[in-house]
Figure (cartoon, rainbow, N blue to C red):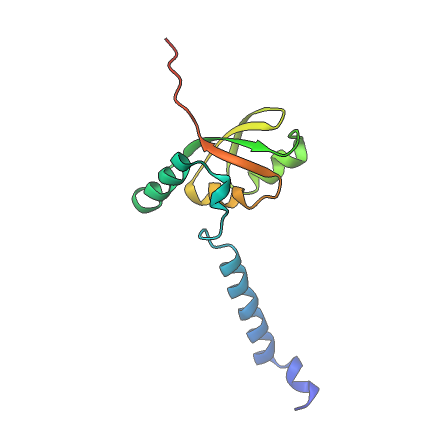
Length: 120
């Protein structure tokens, strides 16, 4: 086999196709760290994935350090909307898929379903 093969269109197309498939597999919403979520958030995500995948879930998260602009940007890169921040705690909303992506961030320690507050 000559080195000319490595410069052919079919070889390049094969490499591109393999790269695209790898990216799609790597970005699968099935890939997440369930241990970083409380039971109620996992249940809510499971339900919404089947019934209403585009619905937003409000949740609270904890990081391993105080949240600065860089960390906030990384959180939002998963598709969630960060609503408030107090040191290492944040409130946010996002789809089930976005929340699963958030568990993959190294600095995210734990996520839980937001609690309803009685404002009487």
